[in-house]
Length: 86
Picture 1 (spheres, rainbow, N blue to C red):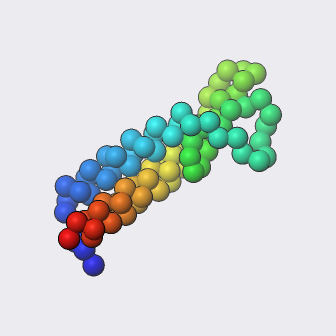
Picture 2: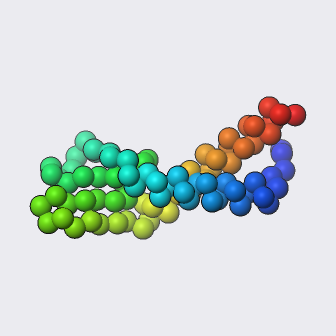
């Protein structure tokens, strides 16, 4: 098992959180949902924009799960890069 340095871990956390928050701009239309609403976030929808009222709803739990998902993806990529480098 490869050892991860703390710098790589901190960088993965920062990049993962940035990607997770940036997915709030990715339009995602789920199979079932309220027509007229826009859903944002990937892989989970964590931001909903209601077209009729103009309000936005945020789900903190889904945002945290998205950020954790992207942190894991960045760590896997970093580990694969380290393995391919050596």
